[in-house]
Length: 383
Image (tube, rainbow, N blue to C red; front, side, top):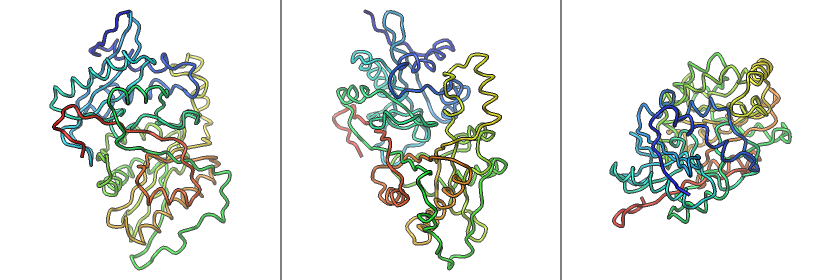
């Protein structure tokens, strides 16, 4: 049986690259394929924002002419916080349970990164920390969630066999809103007033476009020192405008002091609810069903995708109270809209302050994603 690793150099091979995971994982417990058009928005060079400031290469693995795996390698203009210099990324790692296939893909990606001057690789990412970071290592049985990756359990073992070790774990946390009582909320009623007038306002479908620059700025300011941070751009956030028609009428909160934004939280609905049972490529009848569902869509669950607070407030009493206010407001808002659950990530395993806050609100850790790293040369060391 002949194994070959092919660079993706044309639209036909790109289509195979994007379409491969549903073909590989169909029937595996826990796997639910997202809509193909969503994947194309993240991976197609003509659509994905990463390509405007990074370099990416894709490869397909074939055995006897049949696709059996894929991988990407990418280098970004922005160096992630806390990783060594000369570090590149790998991602889009999906393959059958075969060591030769996965070893061939990894060797190809490492070879390209080394040729670009990299001495380390870390991942997997689609396509960086602001996309879908990490390899799922716990929570395979959890229901699917928007923009949350799924991987079969065997990939972890193959990566470790090939010399990749843990660099960092990211956790997703879930809150069952049906079990939350009003008495457990309002933990933030005593916001310090000495800093000025504190107000909260909703992010709505209509305000989303105007709020995106605020979201970008507060996220980048608040998380700029965190391990793995890569600045968000407005390009990264433009996909949210496509989701706006499906969002609840209120989808987040902005906290302001004397009229100036200091903290923000934004959630999106679980789009798997909309596409359930239709597959990654709906039939003409499936598209009609999707359109009918969209007209009547009332999400039952959602995901917090961004929460940020101004850096000068992060470790203050006022900042802690503001974060409590954000969560209070968000939980009350989502309960009023009829949501049953919300999920938040990606929370670094060593972010003790945020973890304590989530536990205080009875969130439960439900998924863990591992970022693996590897050094290519003996004289390089992980930072």
